[in-house]
Image: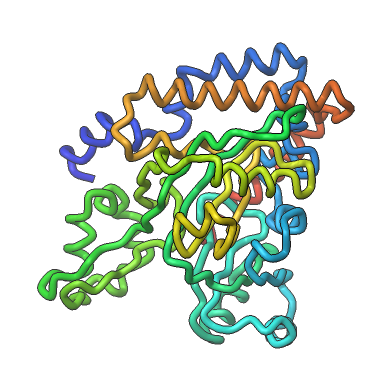
Length: 347
């Protein structure tokens, strides 16, 4: 990274390391731990998801608690099984190429891939060190995130954040190589090591004029996706859709839905949308990004969500949902961190 880019990164809080960004307000989180007398005060927030959905939960347990019509066709593939068994699962499921694959327990878009043919799947399966899912590639054109929480004693919840996602991509001009386009991109140029790892074998390719090339298919801010705040689109129609999802299993109280839909209007009407993921207690209110928000305002948003998380968890605890013990939570978190360290090595 150049000196110029280094200082730009320092000046822009959105590019800071996670620990650095959250360090100044971490005392509030600790205060909630003390008030709850539990280091894992958040675990009752979503009672039917492991660890409240803070980290290390599987996608399978999340999908099983949502209406079948709003989730993509998905199969679960154990690592290490013969590839012939994988082919049998694909045939039985009716899943067709191209489709996406990702770890059942994953985060930050690690090992998320689009599989175009059998050769790519065989290579992925051979290298994959953990159980993963193969899932139909949802072709709806609009990808959004909706942050929703509901206090357990209330029928209606709150849609606190609504954003549109644009995947990290470059557009060809008929002259520049992929490497040059990456180096000129306002986001990708801060991720040169990652881009080199993923796309070095294509660096000399000249993209035709107006051709779109996706540098990452993961719609995460830490993977370079661009967010557009849609807060003006939040209304009773949108809230009604997520109240219905929240009440489906009576146990999703706090988190962020990642969704693909045909249009914002269709989503509000409760049609033509697919839930890609539900992120629980560990979900970041990602509507703080890409909207020229000052750091102080971003902290205010984060603290408002932490307060809601604490309040929901406290209420559920008083009504029979126990906090995880310190040792149980510590062991789970240690296993989760070990798991993700393995994934990062293979990504």
